[in-house]
Length: 134
Image (tube, rainbow, N blue to C red):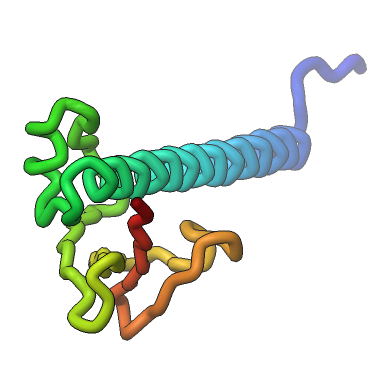
């Protein structure tokens, strides 16, 4: 007698293999999405720091808000990934330093900022020092 079709264990095995492929592709997609968001965040941070330095060189003071930078026409306020809201505080001791602070929730700052940009971390708040030069 010739048997046609698949046995139950073959169907279960095929379903398990397909499910594992689907799960691996989903993990890969999430990793790629997170990596793209990190890169976007880093690029926007570099643009923000450069805009602050340009503002300092031009006016002798740092801008106190992103909107103030945007009004000067050299910066566009981006939609920050990872719910970033920058607060700018002039350094009390050095007039040519600016402290940029933001809260980062559920994100490791060392992954975002890397080792090339010095930062301080206090809990989930990150502080970056920007030095303006004339």
